[in-house]
Image (cartoon, rainbow, N blue to C red; front, side, top):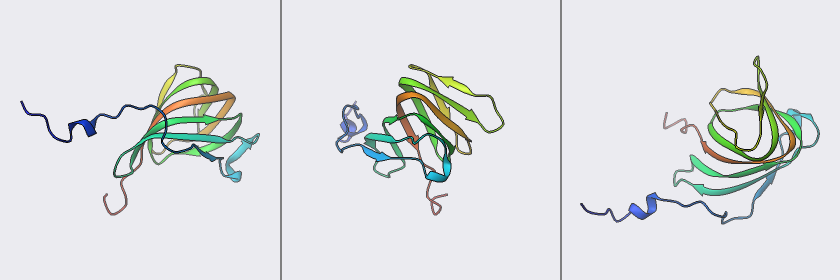
Length: 129
């Protein structure tokens, strides 16, 4: 058995982000309630830029979402409700996890300031599809 020279590069322990968090907010036309703001700490980004992982934090409020990417997330703290268009609200608290698929649309409501671990996979570029 031989060790591949790049084997160590295939394991990435996620600790603290190398860069300061990105501060953002939903576009004003998507906000339904409050003035939510976000802080995104990216701990890992794949070389092709399509897969990344980290921690996302949000203040209270509600906004419309539309996903063209895959996202796995687990709530670390806080409380939120995700309501799919045409579906039932799903309340989330610390430890709850979910997957959002491309095509998901609905409303994300933060009831108590929250933080979540996330892994996002963006769709392939048009020329790769």
